[in-house]
Length: 242
View (tube, rainbow, N blue to C red):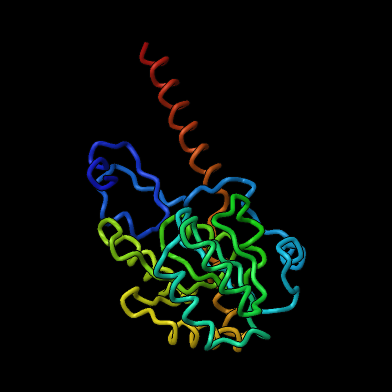
């Protein structure tokens, strides 16, 4: 849709520099993806306490959007036998359909876990996490960058124009994420990926630094300033010509 309408636009704001090659606007401006101001890091230990989690344990945040992602939920549960419950704990935002089953699996298995169908104040789960397992939508990528979080990305295969795979590849090429195609995702390889990163703090820290290094300074303010500048310029031009 953006590509179609770009040919008639004065400017298009993008989240990724590479988007300019797909657009026909007079101007393509890479200001980043604006997020709400409240979505910013808080103290990690305080966030874990708020969620009832161990302050010092490796924490995996699992999310699949507001409606969850059934396949990701399923594969996380299949991965549990391959993970060490003394090493790993979970924040799992399941979506409404899978929440009862996921919550029961953690409880009966004796895992340290916070589960919820969804979470509106996402600054707490992101701040508490060491690693994020998620889809690769543009907003999710922007959130990972803002919080400087390494990620295991599972692109949604049915996403329009395969944009999630492109997003995931972009972040992985910058050493901030690893990508597992949904068709390749198993409980076994997921457990191996999580365990490998949980046991490699230096590698995890490098991925986190790479993610945080991609942050753009205040995209919303940059977009607003550009628009006000354009409107002010046009107003002055109209007055002069009159």
